[in-house]
Image (cartoon, rainbow, N blue to C red; front, side, top):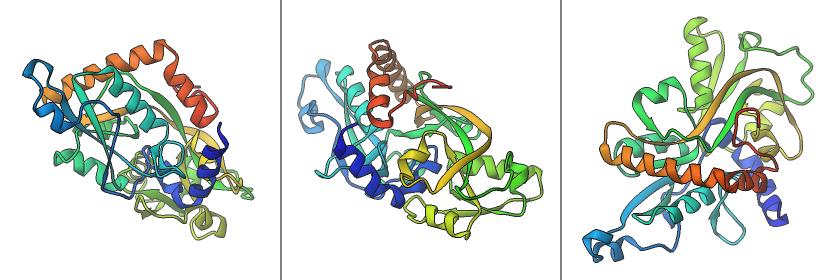
Length: 290
């Protein structure tokens, strides 16, 4: 891992913990950053129809350390961002344009056609699958667990152990869905505390006791808590593939998802995605159990 990457992750970590709770993360800007120097939308409009390049707007964020963030040079980068750029290079018929925004706005922006797909460590779950299209070839995988303060000595193993306690999460996140589904079956036994994707005080909230716990993916903790103030505990709550999210019921979206799957399979076969994971996370999270 390059020193500059470690430095940026440490600086951004405390301010961006909630991004990792989303099974996706959080951004805070609504501008665009070109994904690659490939043909611009303006240039593609004047190209012959047989060679026309279709502009695809990709929604992502800026506050997810090592996944999608702004580095010290002002560049949008990270695991998901660089993977999108690699895929873009493989698909000459498309030109990807990365647009950054708050995590909590990503799904709505997809529904309202402001973006064409989401690249933000999005976890596939039944609730999301009912409304959205996912590509079939995962590019990462993770395990969700309970996160508490490091000096917490309670025997926390399952969600049952969180009854009556305040648990922090991000609205629309995969972790929020886990908590909400539990509460539906247990008379709202857990006191769910919501914050938006731009919140910056999750670590101090848990350490100070204002909230008791949160849920997070297994790879997240070292990224957002470099000082080691928190820890994961108990059983794995869920295991999930990480995929890109598209609009459902649109032939164009299905075609795009299929082409992206082809590119992902090629990149996996070449070891390029594992290499990206090792570069950004220090471990290969491209498969369940990785």
